[in-house]
Image (cartoon, rainbow, N blue to C red; front, side):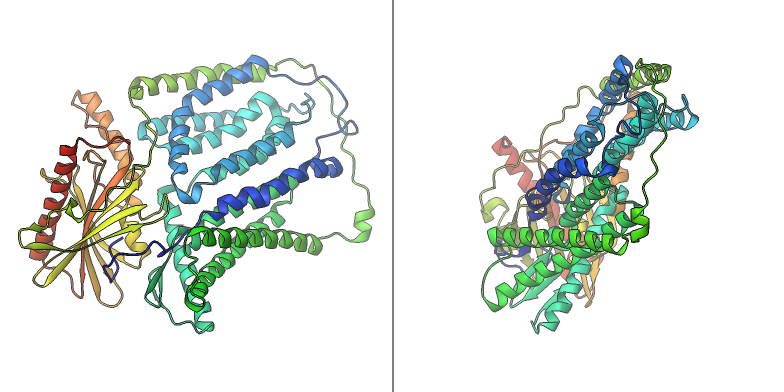
Length: 593
């Protein structure tokens, strides 16, 4: 990132970032919960399936080919979108724990379905709400296909699960699938990049609280945006230390515990709120502890194993505090002794029916199978030739100031520096920075990489305290794919002008698009444009690269906004530099990723 106030070679310990929550999610919480279900389920009546005292023994229900065919048809129709969505989540640091959410849902499903099903709770056949849910889910999948929206496809799948479970297995299957279904909602990110906005809010809150604690400890520091400067060192409060990573992990732990043990709506809501509070406390403690170690004792803990150890330890403490909160709520909500002595009423025995596939399941399968196979056929007909290449991390580029020319018109290269961050860092794992100057103006340029696709740079500047005043997408012929220009401002009478574009290692462009909440809409607009071109017989635009993205930017800041002539000069410098870079890479023949 080159939008700071000092342009020097930045050491690798400037960012306070860790993936400890994902690690501690597995080693601190899941083993304990995985050990507790067996003993807990065997001795807690609330968690066990109905026994012979409640439902008479009878033959188990089997939905046979109808259930298998319906589930397979839905899976085939939505599989491409789920693959895209999981690939998208795997390269977002705050969703890297999503495999454990899937594992937790599988555990909940096993707990609820480990006893055989009976036909005692079949319920009314084909209610209107079930058919309405199936229709809404089907329409959602169709809309996801038209809009190329994996998010909408995931929401549609979640909408489909309850009515599909009810239609194929009745009320009993519907009831048993709900806990796993509820946990899987954590895999659906907020729409319109609301999670990024949440990251910014948590970063700001963590920075403010950490600054207050450092003030109380009489540690001299300066908070600028989400950067805490202490003794000339910049500690950037990133996603991990803002709480977004550990928040997702601890919320998943909490929801898993609530659903596994059936804590109830009231107690479960209080536990979820407590989880948010303990995460914020833990992450403020982490920022303060890192700052104290570096300033008071000279111990570098911003990166490396020390930071990982601090993150794991604090997350473990947060889990312990959450479990302690659960025990406190249990004590406060414990019923009176007289109420505890009163026996629970035993449910009346239900009638056991014959274990044959009910007509309702056959009717549901007869509707679901062809309707979703049609979606699958349309998808492969329209997109079957589109490959989903995995995002591989390219090797680090050789650090060389000669990657860009020494002189461009009046501009001369004055300085060069590099920066290395953690993998999947929001600002890019690697960056090479150049300083170009001419009389009365200096411009910072940067090449940052790798990103899994188009990376909205405006979020990075917002996280460091800049405000976006305006942004514009331009598509000149001499910049393939176009570029984005942004005007920014900052408290203290600071103004900035930013121009950036993105391309792959061979120089093939990613189409420029507006940032912020407008970025998700760009994908939908592009999908509509492709459909319109197909219908009108016009040639389709070239597909975007599927490999890692390289982001090139130029940035200038000052006490007053640039005049129109100054902005034009900066744009011309940007065009010349990115053209030189692409031509050099094209001459090298690209690089295999």
